[in-house]
Length: 68
Image 1 (cartoon, rainbow, N blue to C red):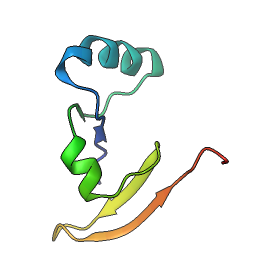
Image 2 (tube, rainbow, N blue to C red):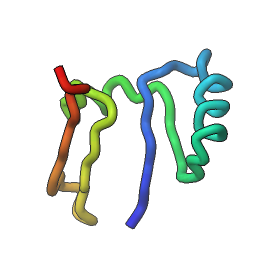
Image 3 (cartoon, rainbow, N blue to C red):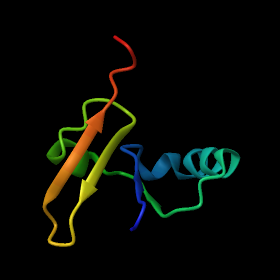
């Protein structure tokens, strides 16, 4: 199993993102500028969780709407 974090924040916010990850104790790989990926996955809310199979197919997903 591999955990991967993505954010739509751009390269100009990398320092802020890294600071947040460090404070939160998040050690798995994270990428930024993932606007197209987020759109392709229809990530309307954050956090969103996805399980993607070895074949690259989306197997399961869950998005929280913040209680709204």
